[in-house]
Amino acid sequence: MLYDAMINMSYVPVDIEQAVIRECKRRRYSEKTAKTYVFCIKRFIDKSPLDTV
Image 1 (cartoon, rainbow, N blue to C red):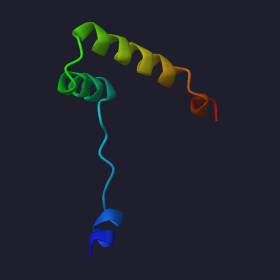
Image 2: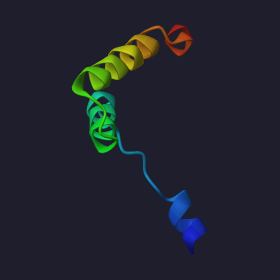
Image 3: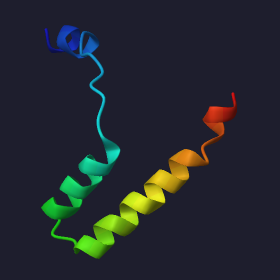
Image 4: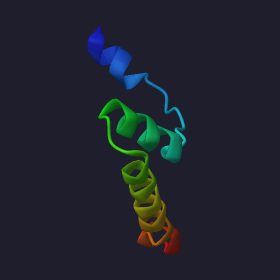
């Protein structure tokens, strides 16, 4: 039963910036640290080689 539920799970798009900020708040990181993480993740995604395929 659980296996069937896992197969039928649909993909839910997530706003990466908000998800990172929310996780940083949960971990009680400073606002500056959260902004740095968001900047690094955006930069990594923008330079992703998957865009060139």
